[in-house]
Figure 1 (cartoon, protein in one colour):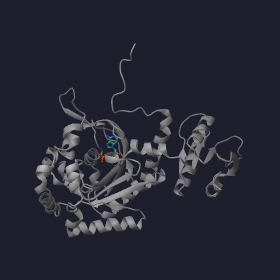
Figure 2 (cartoon, rainbow, N blue to C red):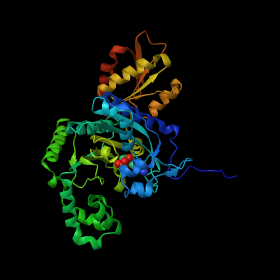
Figure 3 (cartoon, helix red, strand yellow):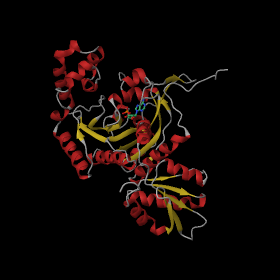
Figure 4 (cartoon, protein in one colour):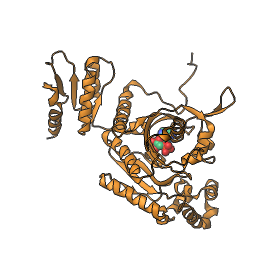
Length: 424
Ligand code: AMP
């Protein structure tokens, strides 16, 4: 007999073998966000449809083709959330966070839904790590947000990430830029696709991210946003660039990077990855959305944030040959707090640590550590250890030692500095 149902198209099971990567991504997200004063927020999986129609724009692909919209039993139109920013901004005002000390720093992790055509890197249910810093227009906050994303990839040791940044101006300078774009594309209108002709009318900035070959051919010589910035936007962009340079964060100015909606202002950025090709090469992105709150019917309030895709990041983690530097294991519940504390101390010193938070048996945890190609394992709570001691095991040399908990950090740094076996 055939099974009555199959997994819906465009969805995935995250199987036990993959959970470690997910734990690594969400663990790093929480640690990095919390260390910078970002607090977690969870909003409902579905919202009133109007929230997304307004925030994504009635004519956007998301709204016209990709939303999971349904009437509930009371006849109200509901939509499975396709993105996180509009719900977070709604919650910020609903909960009165706008009356607290600004900016309010929030992060979220969870599933999102878009009725996309499923393909590699594109699913109907996918997950994002996002942050939003609301209530402050300072460019330093843009830098903080970008740096947080950058740190996340770094702590996962995802290399080959390219940070692309641009400024798309604001209500003062964008109208002039929009007209310059129209002037540029107007002579070629007949050659453009129907879709691009309607972009020309409604929102010419979107011609810059059209994938249609006729538009793509014209993009290279199109006017650049940066040449049209007003003084205030120009100063803000210089501050963002300065902040990134000061923070040692490499970036590429990409004048083609745009956001198609009016409420986006100034900074726009994306994290690209060399291994992802074509339209799906972005691990995530974000920017400033100073006009969003007012568009949603709230008091004018600036904000900046990003959303990073976990499925695409997981693909890269899986292809990575090197494992974490250290895999931390608590032998029983009572050892858990010390294990977490040591893991955190090591992380702050730049050691990539995965803390096993499961209740699996010790040998199962050690099995995972070697499967993930971890260099060292930290075992907390072994009976044979003297009081206040833990065990450090070198998983390649297959040697272990019992050391005082205060000695863990220097000893780990020492062991990691030694060349791994085989690399002479
Ligand atoms: P966006 O909200 O469209 O800017 O998307 C931000 C990031 O979320 C993208 O760069 C992807 O990594 C991820 N993402 C967006 N849509 C999908 C999807 N349909 N399937 C998988 N990941 C997605």
